[in-house]
Image 1 (cartoon, rainbow, N blue to C red):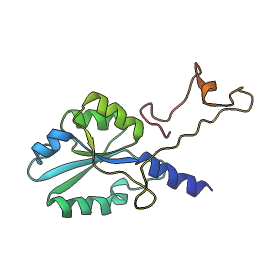
Image 2 (cartoon, one colour):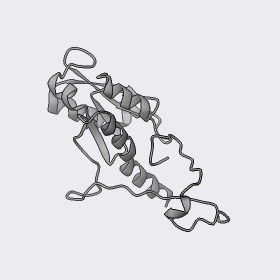
Image 3 (cartoon, one colour):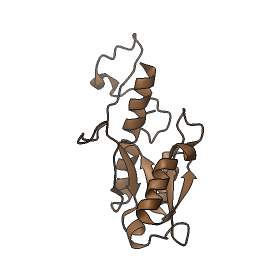
Length: 159
């Protein structure tokens, strides 16, 4: 069951997988690294041993389709990715649902260009589980109101 949950979490975290920086990516394909290079950024996940290696097929496809060199950047957290996008230093990023909302709120030009789905024709989506101790008194989502909630990354919906 755990491998299925991990796959689902990875798919959900990538629900708005590739997000381009609107005008900076379209108007100037060489905006970040110079020459014919686009910068692709992602944050590490707990099961990732080589993040760049795991994205190698995506990076290769992007290079083929765009005719542009794709430089991989391993970011420390979603806040760094969002700031890099706003500063024009990151052209394409893997964002989860909440970081996408934060990024879009800070830069309306940020546009999702792809989303991970389970099967062709499926709509992208996200499912979140709230977990509380049996003695917490929380029985539904409303029960979390006014309570402290812990996240692995404050900008992440999945941790």
